[in-house]
Length: 162
Image (cartoon, rainbow, N blue to C red; front, side, top):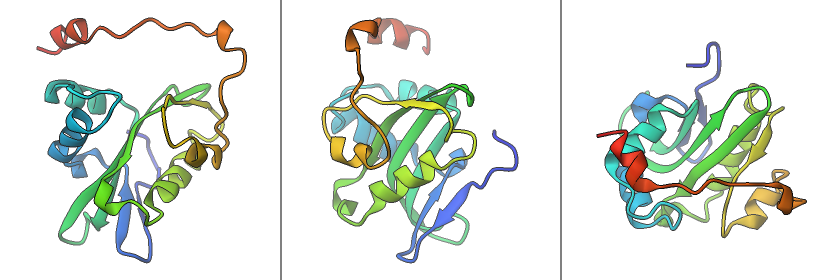
């Protein structure tokens, strides 16, 4: 865990963002990612749990405050980073019934302003929401021909977590 970092933000509409992993509702995250997220549809619960455990920061968005009483998880994002040069933003979502309330903008603001992340080179991959991310300095990759990728093999990944 990152020491001496703010782990909870609240807004005037009764929503909270926290980096405290113990507040995360794994079922909400798993159900959205495995059923609704085009980028990992069909992912297993074991791999969702492993991705959370192995990410430096996970952000939960909550209707309510996990410290003060009942709350419901309504959004999520996770960051993989060395906290110096590189950060990868992934699995960003707000549940459909909570969209249009500014929660994704608030979440992005909290993430990019994190003191240990704000100087890093942030990357993400998305088919949609380009205008959202552009508001926070994200741009399409230049010289894409210089980038390389090794494809993900879900079966091999899953075998490592059985």
